[in-house]
Amino acid sequence: MDGQNSESAVTAPSVRSSELLGYPPDARVLIVNADDLGMYHAINAAVIDSIENGIASSCSLMVPCPWAVRALFTPDRAPELLVQARFDEVELEFRAQIDTVVDAGLTPTHLDFHCLADGGRDDILDLTVALAGEYGLAVRVWLDLGRRKLRRRGLPVTDNHFLDSFSLDLDGKSARYARLLRGLPVGLNEWAVHPSLGNEESQAIDGGWRVRRTDYEFLTSPQARELLRQEGIVVIDYRALQQVWSQTSAPRQRRPCGFPRNSGHRRTADPA
Image 1 (spheres, rainbow, N blue to C red):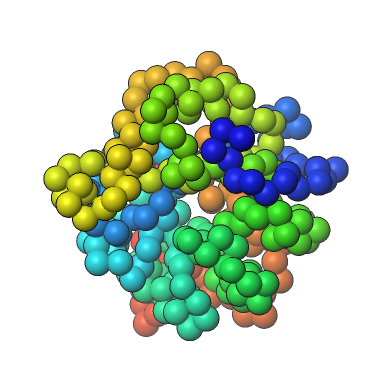
Image 2 (image 1 turned 180 degrees about the vertical axis):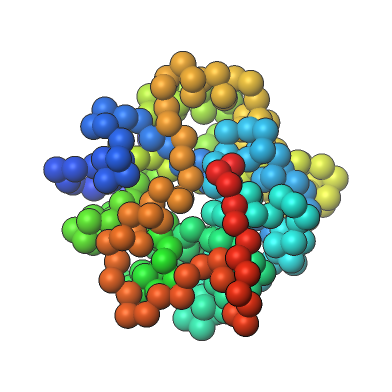
């Protein structure tokens, strides 16, 4: 299935998530999320470049990782790049990670579970959705059960199969990405990509460095941007989903993200 996950497609609702976001019924909408920010320096550098000079539109911050602090406090670039930050782990750890980013003066848009898919258990997904309501965030959900549950609540999640770049073959990867863009279905789509520089640092500590390097090469290629233009694909980030989630969720008491505790100042961010 061209690297898409093996879950069957969610039964099509009467209105696609892309339509909930304000796009016409025939629009092809894509989130290109660069995962693993904070893991090590070469990933941080490649994620930044893939957003600033490539087609990536969103990024995933792993707060407990060793290079997360450097990602949080990248001078001048952090407000633009981390407006889409995301978090993993469980229960109190979730809240601690959210607060770490918010208290740094940044404005996250969504929560994510990294390798736990939709949390691994229904109660963890429910907890995360509740936290998202409290903080005014969206949740990255891509397995069928979670997608059906949240669509019944009128919340936008990916309409189609979720792409994990680690499931793609290395040989002919650029051509495969091109075919996937040309065949992108109508509705909201999401790709989880994993860019890294693939330098000596990467090769010494990361067995998946070739996956990351080839992702980075395609994301920053002129071909990728030209294909998006030719195909009329709209690339968005999680701010669009966050807006609808915030309007639809009914939190008990919301703490707006972007306001650090014990501070009256907010660091704002413009679209990437």
